[in-house]
Length: 221
Ligand SMILES: [Mg+2]
Image 1 (cartoon, rainbow, N blue to C red):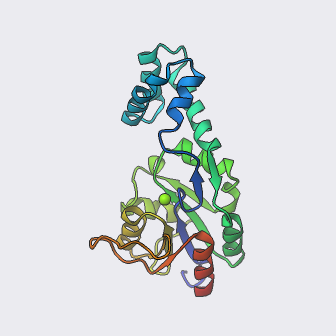
Image 2 (image 1 turned 60 degrees about the vertical axis):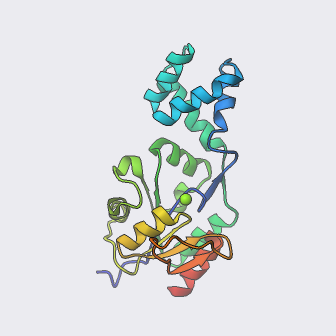
Image 3 (image 1 turned 120 degrees about the horizontal axis):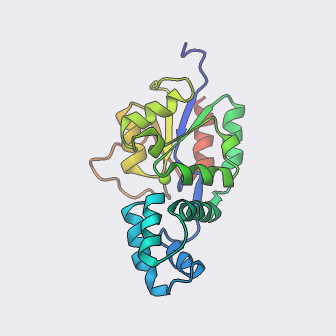
């Protein structure tokens, strides 16, 4: 059957397909300003958020700071805010389109909140550009755990075979995870790449960005 299966690409989301404007904690001061809280409250709001990145966490923020909103409402606001500060890395839509035109099946494999990661994909127009999405929260496993890579392939009705590829920017999650399930890999990293820790497997290739990685994949297929 694998003789007739299209080539399979698993690909990371953050810093591989999309980037975020601002630091990870940049939303907390904006949140305080939007809800009439003093700027000094931002650190405490962020600490509560880090402890529980969910509607329940936002319910605790609301209770601690006297906000009249439900945790669900504040969570939805946060998801929208995170999506709004997400943008495509240049060349990514064209790279994904070229791969699919060449017959590749593409599944996004990403660690994070299902709501947020899917909102980022929707906002950037990437949902129709890929064949499946597998987010750690809904998969019940985070990269580098093998389960999430198997789950991503299963969403395409596939099993992982050694001719499948993983592309991502994070050696600890993307490369180690790919290696553990026997995939070939491309590490998205600046040129020249920084040294990898000895415990990390070497990628099959490195590339400065996803369009360059797609060109390598097209050359192999
Ligand atoms: Mg990443």
